[in-house]
Image 1: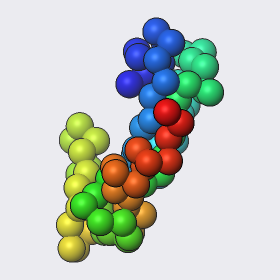
Image 2: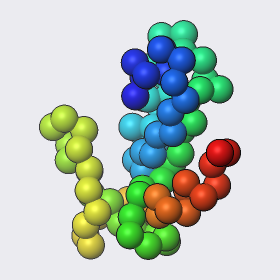
Image 3: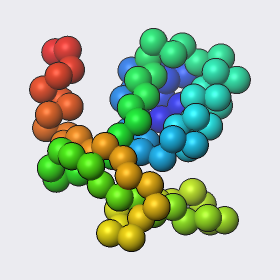
Image 4: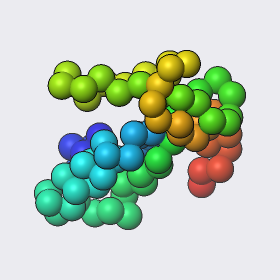
Length: 88
């Protein structure tokens, strides 16, 4: 996503894990990217809106996923709802 912002594309990024979102924002700022082109959303994309539990994989490649026994509760939005709210 960051290389697209560097080329002038507007990107909407959904990252439900707060620490991963903070790292993404820090990386973008350190690389001098125009933050008005990078729209960061602290939420998951799901089939229905609401709260979901996420499980983080520690020590791997940063993957996470929805899991009933997840340790983090995050907001989920639907892609349809999000696209309806974007400028045409």
